[in-house]
Image (tube, one colour):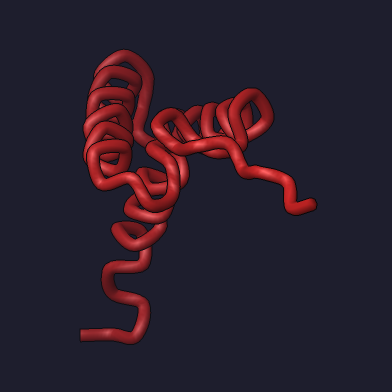
Length: 79
């Protein structure tokens, strides 16, 4: 056991929830499945470090295109 054990898993869980939409359990599950399929597909074609880099780039694209996530609700403005 080290203090940094599991850090990469925590980061991927955070990315899954962000992709799926905060507060949406089905969105988090879908985000985790998308991450797994993306990593396996890109890793089999290229390499694991390239898959991680593309995962982070894809996360940035999703956050720019849809900041609330895939299954999240748009934030409402207060009056």
